[in-house]
Structures are given as C-alpha cells and as structure tokens.
Length: 391
Image (cartoon, rainbow, N blue to C red; front, side):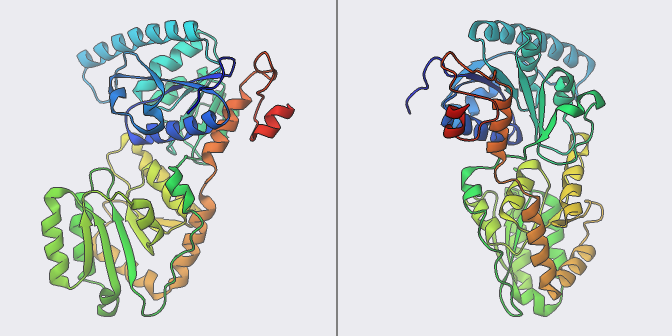
C-alpha cells in the first residue's frame, strides 16, 4: 500500500484492550486510509496484540492504567501511570501535530485524549455501548464530538449532549458484505437453525439452560431444531452428551471462525448483548433472545439489549429470568408463529447501521479545517473523493 503524501491530514487513533474498543478503530482506520489520510495509533502495552489494519499502522505506546474495581493502592499506581502516559502523549501530539485525535474508550485511550485536550487539538470519542463508559465519561466534556452506536446513550453529561452524533458501531467488512442476505425461509416442516453465542469465552449459563429447555419443548419442535452453540471447553462434552440424549442435532465449539455466516443462516440467536454482537446481528438482521451479562461494568449490556428490544428486533431476558421453563415457552411460542420471527428480523435490520464506518469517517472530516492542507484537497464531512476535490 502506498503511503499518503506528507501534506495529507494526520489522524491519531487512541485504542487498545477488548474487541469492542478495537473493532471500530480498525474500521475507521480503513475508511480514513481510503480517503487519503495518514494514520498513527497510540495504545498501551497491549498494543503488541493488535492485528489487521491497526497492526499495520505506525504505533506508539504510552503508560496507562485502569482504576475501576481496584483497591486504594492500585488506584494510586494507576493514576501515576495515567499522568505519565498523558505527558508521553502530550509530547507526541506536539511533535506530530495531528489534525484530529480519535479515542475509542477504555483506559488505554485516556492519556492520549487528555493530552489532546491540553494541546488544544480537535478530538472525538466513540462509545460502543448504550451507556457511556467510565473513560469516555471522563473525556466527554473535553472533546468536540461524541460518536455513539445507539440512539439512546445513558450517562452523557448534559453539557456535552450537543456534541453527540449517532454513527453506529462499525462491523468487520465480512459482516457488512452479507448484510443483504434474506432471512432464511421457515416453513412448517423446515429445519430450525438456532445459534447460541456466549461472548468471547462462552457462557456456562447457556450450556446449562439450553439443554434443559429443549427437554421441555414440544416433541414436534424438538425434532426440527439444529443447535449451533459456542461453549466453554470445560462444558463442551457434557453439553454434547445432553443433546445426544435428547436426540437434538447440535454442533458445538468454543470458537467459530465463520460466526457472521452462521448468524446469517440462523432463524434465531440466543446470546449476550455486547456491542459487537448487537452490531453484527442488526447489520445482518436476525432476531435474538438477548441475555445480558449481569456483571458488566455499569450494566451496559442490559441497556444494549433494551435498544434492540424496543426496536422490535429481539427479546430481552435477564439472566435470572433465563430459566429452562421460560426459554422453552418462548421457543414454543415463537416457532408456532414464524411471522413473529420474520418481523423481528426486519426490525433488527432497520435498527442496524451498516454504514457506521463511513459515518464515523464523516464525523472526523467534519472536525478538519475547511481549507485542509496547503492544496485545499480535504474538507469537512466529505463522503467521496469527488466531493472532497470539489470542496
């Protein structure tokens, strides 16, 4: 890949940690590279784990530390780490002079975004969940734009509300590419595909409840069901044996490389409600029973699930209410009236933002000087090369 010319706008990305913070940064990097921007990444010590488009960028590491859930001594140490990292990032920003700095939440982004504020550099943050994360809460009043994945996001300071723009949560190109696939036909005697996803490590509650619930559904329904389920390694053999005893067809694994294709082929998902999962099922357009992880920070998964439930694209079921009896009843009811699932699939699709990466890039361009570089060949909010050249 050829490098953009030296007078192209330089965008600094601040990201690291979990996939929810990294995926949107990677998608934005791809979009901005297509639009002729130069890119650098600032991360913490975990930056060596990054791959894909982010792994190709010129990368700088600064000190950082998390505070939530730590004891007093550990918090003091983390504060010192953040201060040191902020000084490192401030020096870097003043040397490189980026046009815009974009942060993606999590403690890895805090020093760089604080430094951007002190350096009076235009800055924006992206929030993947329906509750503003603690790092982004700290930064919300210091940036010019707050990009959100959901239309309703809790904990945004009133003073910063005017800077909010819903861009959506970017998904991987492979997910966006199959977003146009129709909902699988569901006839009175067709096989029913149920996909069970439990987050990055699987979820033991699904391993326990699913097989017990299928023992309670009608015999006619049980014969039609094919389960594809993500399980913890330690649960896999026990779950496989339970399905075998029930006579239920099942494919189990602790990891699926082609999960987006399996989502597209599913009639129903039963899953957690992390931001990346929600973005994928709404981009593809598949109905889901959403069981939020109850120990997520600020209970953000419940808010994520509420957004889909309110849009009609799925059904929120708390983990305490996720019992074999309630799930069996839900499955009996849903598959008795397939039209309900088809309508939910359409509603989920309407709730998605398949062009989230483009919207996020537009937001970044809106923060750039209207005249751009010395040749005036980049401008605010442009969506195409032709539009930028005409600015």
